Image (cartoon, rainbow, N blue to C red):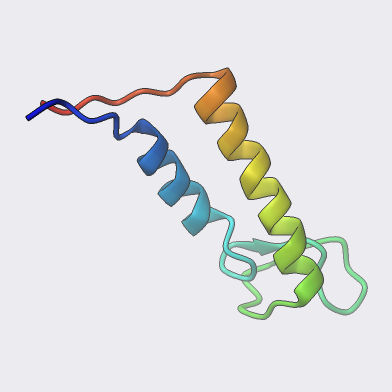
Length: 72
């Protein structure tokens, strides 16, 4: 069996957990705040903003930086 590149998978999982709206922070926050921390609430706008940030970070780390983690 050949070795697999686990770098993109681990980066995507890490960013997915960290950028979950309401878990650590939420941008934009509820009640007209710029950000809220550990609110455990979310909105459609916050989901959209976190999705754009997630895509941007994944693109930067997978394509521009070229993170690679080989197994085997």
